[in-house]
View 1 (cartoon, rainbow over the protein chains, first blue to last red):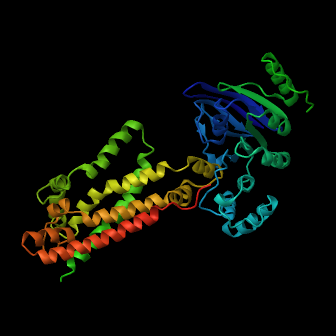
View 2: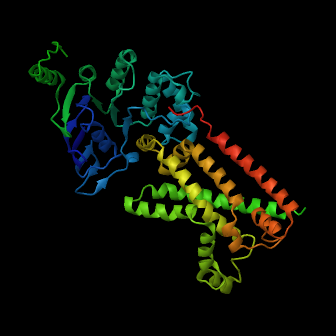
Length: 239
Length: 221
């Protein structure tokens, strides 16, 4: 169970996020610049909110009243960056190994082998990120995150830098990963089809304010109405 | 031909470049994190030696290191060490004059660093020192190495501040640049020309190295 209730003053608006998720993949849905990534960064500990709290199961990650602010290293929150943020000077294996620092050095090679297989990266072990395709990069980034055994998985527009053909290929792959993942997963996107396909719940973000998460089908009905007012008819979909 | 100036110039330049290498990287890294006003002030102070005449730098150094000045007299009285007019006195002068070159190239290299990589490292549980040495430095290595080589090249050519703080004593504090001046002044044109040619050759080789290092490599992803 992840509970978020934070506020952070930004240049253009004040970010207010209040939601919780428990076992069901959650989508944060909103336009670019609405504060989606910033919300994720606050959960991961990369950015510090001004006030509020973030709790993960029985652990407090952030609490302004009690001056608790765990560093990202201690939060166990996996973050898939939009551009994947692979370390360019390391090979695929070395990139994966950076997620394994909690293991003694001797055991890491074996772990790397297992993860490489699980994420279908066999044969790419000694390649550098610059020589990989977009889909391969994403798999390496995911492998690296899962190597670090996170309790939360944050996906920051995971398909924005892929062409739509590759995206179709990778959607089921990501869906499986989210389904098999034991912790909480949050997806940030501005694509309604990603929300419906990957997530059970969705929370709209507008000008920094996150509204209560709704069931994905209820969310879609609302979105549809919203569009209808603007004269756009969305198809009927059963989630 | 007495090769002492070549040897002396090379060791002064090498030691100074080494000092400036670490000091420049450390300053570039830590100053980038400071609040804007403080950063602006320190930036001006640390870059000043680049635009000041070396004689002004030499004068300012003598103001603190001279035998009758605060630091100079402290070392003379307590350790019986005179800080000026030794071969290594030139290291003070050269380091100060060359420092801005290393500092600014390192800073430029750090500014191009993709901070997402550091953030990704932190969420993966990597220690900050690991992120600095294994991710940040390798990412910026081209700029940093180019800065170091450029510093070494400039260090070889320092004249103004060096001549003020180390003077010219043949076989003791003579460097290529001070030797050229002295030889020309005393009418020994032939020997002066030899040193000039040696100097040009060394500098050309060093600059060639800089260009090779700055040649864009296949990278980043």
